[in-house]
Amino acid sequence: MTWLSPILLLLVTWLAIFLQTGLMPLRELLGAPPNLVPALIVYAAFTHGLAMVTALTLTAGLWIDALSGSRLGTGVAPLFGLGFLLHTRQHLLLREQRYAQFWLGFAGGVGVPLAHAGILELGAAEPALGWFTVRQMLSLGLLNGLACPAVFLLFDRLRGVFEYQPSGPGPYTSNREMKRGRH
Amino acid sequence: MFKRPHYIALGTCALLLLALLNLPAPTSARLKLAVGGVFLPLFGLSSTAHSFVDEASYQLLPRQTLIREVRRLEAENDQLRLQSAQGTDAIAENNRIRSQLGLLPRGTWKPRPARIVGRDPSTWWRTLLIDHGTRDGARLNQPVITAEGLVGRIAVVGHSHSQVALIGDTACGVAVLVVETRDQGIVKGPQSTVESGIVELSTFQHSPQILAGHTVVTSGDGGIFPKGLPVGRIIDTRAANAGLFTTARIRLGANLNRLEEVWVLEQ
Image (cartoon, rainbow over all chains, first blue to last red; front, side, top):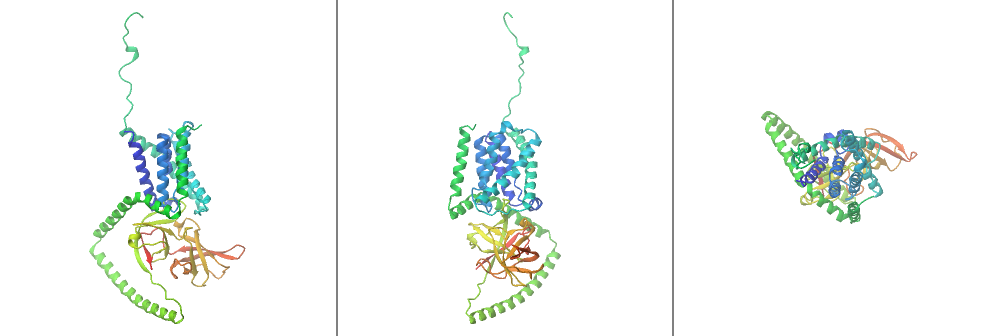
């Protein structure tokens, strides 16, 4: 059942991007679209292989670009950068603790849109930047920071339900072993 | 250091990005629509659910309320018919005078209804998705309005859906006119998040006579928007570039947060 988790992750990303195009009350509250994709990429980078991280970041970036005013492909690099960086440095990062997950989500929530804006500026596009961007980044950071532990919790539970669990220690113990011959 | 799979992943991503960013603009737009097609089932589902909730809410309304509403709408319809008759007369007179002066008659615009199905998922753009595509007669750059004012223009056209660049987005500059002073300028770029409904007007010269409360309409220059579409009202003004120009903040007439249906103008 190892295929279930990647499919579920792709499905949730698809739904998250669709919800990003709506949810007006949350959009008004944040001052920006409720982008939860960075939190999902953080989870994928820590729990899945590099192939899955690459596939997820490429797909999510293309999906977001397809529905937005950005040129197709500009949204891929920031997501891939986040996924690749976390995946290759996962042995150096805390991932079990909730506060570590919060700060990783926060960093992703702020870093990904800012990197995207930087790429757009390099491509001579004029993204809507101003003082209001500070509020938008803080809101997105907080949203992803709060969402990241929830994503870990939810997906770990689902994996626990649907995937084979390692069997625990059996009834055999070494001090009960009967040994024959001279000792 | 990196291992072989890391290089493969980096190479795949770099190649894909190079290919996508070097595509010609029309191919990129077509590809964008094809990729966005993945979400069409969800947009369809959302529209159906919306219609179902609307229908259910109509079923719950008491009969007396409906009768009262019908009567109010009948009265409003009579008033609008009268105004329309007067307007038709004025248009005919205007066209007669224009032909006497040797000017081309103004084109007529047919409004087509469209429903908002989604908004831009990115933080950096102000766009909408509407359920009005080439199959419904949509074309690039058609103006999109509501009864309260200008909303934007069609920026990308698909078969069943189109993307609308909202007024205030960098892809939707609008040439405007201040009705009271006849000063002209351009609206572009949001003063804050466009959801707050405030955009910035830059005039072509210093115009101290523009005051708060003045009405702003489209000037018709640029060839995309017809002249006279309401845009909004001036909130405040300030001198820019050492007094060479005037910059004014405009509160938009159309509430871009609460849009559900819009009108696409076809010529």
